[in-house]
Length: 501
Image (cartoon, rainbow, N blue to C red; front, side):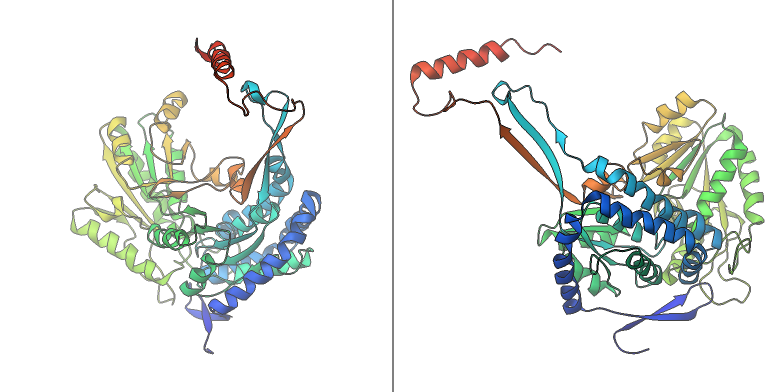
């Protein structure tokens, strides 16, 4: 490997599959200058022309599905199906969604005011692109959680510099090729490959930063952005709870618990990380989950149907998973499936799909983000205990509730401290782009998706146009006692008796 380069591994095998540049501060500064120069022309094209580029890219993703999915699999170690369902399909959906809805969310809004002096004036709220957006993406979902944040920023008329994870940069580079083929003007979208210093340099160059990653690094990003008062949107860690009540459909609940805890080898920020089950159905639920996890195929995915669970992507993550499982064992938990690292002599970064029971909140697996293929299940006496424990976390990204009583389930959802709560479902909300997705507490600031998911890449501008007016308004100079009293009487007449709604 040459100096100034990063080796990209296939984490399922440990094999080096590519090298990419590690850009320095000066190179990032040059990219920022080019991005700023390109942005006004991109904005001037208007929604209709930008929509055409996004729509072409939607088709390009469909036409190049295997190529994109295989690139994701190679640099993440996930299965073909995980790359297809959670990354590639998101991209297809997102390009279509923002092509259709960007202009609706950013159209000028006519504002009505009850303030009497504003009568006869035209009040307008408009959204204008901030300019140059920086996106720092994570390694777990290089398309949906990294490149995906660039799509609404571009749709709004911004130029974008994406700094993908140094672990998984290849997907971003491939998609940039696709956008250029689809007619995106030069330098409107750029990819800055590199390490931490590259991301740090980017924060100081842009008009807004979108970061997805750990809470610890998110705090560092926010602190750096504060130096230049650069606005941030942060999607950070999660320790997402699932509550299973005694009246739930246990088969559906068990299937969701297994799938959404093991999806992407457990490296999903809104995946199920801990489960609370009411005592009457605890044994049956554990038996069902254990049976399903034990038959999962954990292996290298070279195409469709090869395995259910792939490898971990980030090498240190194996140590974190092992530490959490060992800690739980030492404190009295039982491992009823999996519980070992490695995979039949294959290289790469592996940990078996694992189910833990007899767990409690003294254990790391129930309180810290594991981000691996583990499913700790805790028995609770009733729903009140489940809600209390679900909220006993510094995180608040996502949660789920399973019950046969939908009204009760929604009432429980409203008591859980999380940005999103699903009833009798989980995680699928991420693909519903009309719904905002973001966290509370230590899980982040701001949202992706929905109107706010594109408006955050814009500044608001209020415009007031006076159409009917006097030569001089009544409150203007010169002041006289008589005029002042009359104005006060007028305001008392309007507001002195309170408002009736």
